[in-house]
Length: 291
Image (tube, rainbow, N blue to C red; front, side):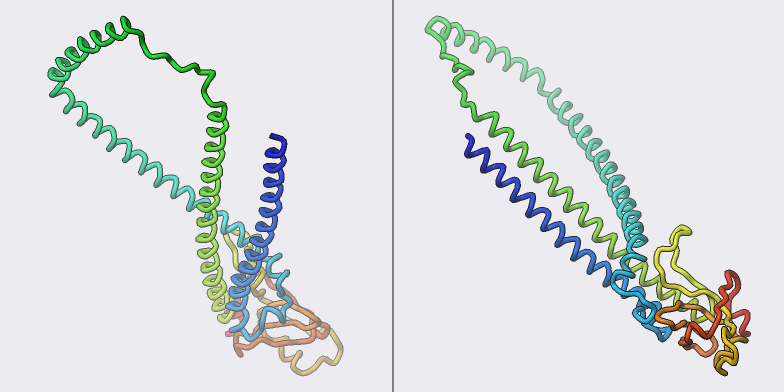
């Protein structure tokens, strides 16, 4: 008994460490997949504007840290909606099944009612015959009932093992269903984010400031502000002076370079951030100003 208990404990510890290792591997794979999907969305926004996400400082950790929260929130929302829809369908199916079963029971009762008289006569005959047989057995000695104490003691343990295996199978099944729903939600959210990035990029090309939002909450860090620039130094370069009369879209600053999109020329300008002052405007579009 002691050896069996220690073996079970050792097996449980082994399964626990194996579960932790599997969870770590799953999280690493999920992080890589999430980064790949988000990187595709960022590239959909920035590449047609003539700049890469890396130029603006969006690396692996930056993309995950700035956009993963919004992505996970969207996945949870879609998963909850899918689960609620599935639950509603399950309830509807259960109602229809119960209704069909009730109708079938009514039909069976009607069929039984038609032969009730014949069945009653047969039961009476069988009852008389059974009474005669029982009296003969009582007179000749009946069979010895087995003692309940003689039943094998392992029956309860076997039942517990069956219940544990059944519970484990149900748990695994629930996890598989949850993983399937989450995977479908991830694919849907990734597709929606890529479509959102493409729509935001087209808006920027028209001279409109744009950011990805869901229910008023920003879900990713790509986007562009409407901005104007002025020289920050005396005797600024000629190209900086020429930019002061333009309405631009500010994409960001990284490594001492400011990235400004010119919707008229349809190109991204790279200007030393120390040479200009960037003024962000919260309203209006460059399409209105540059006409």
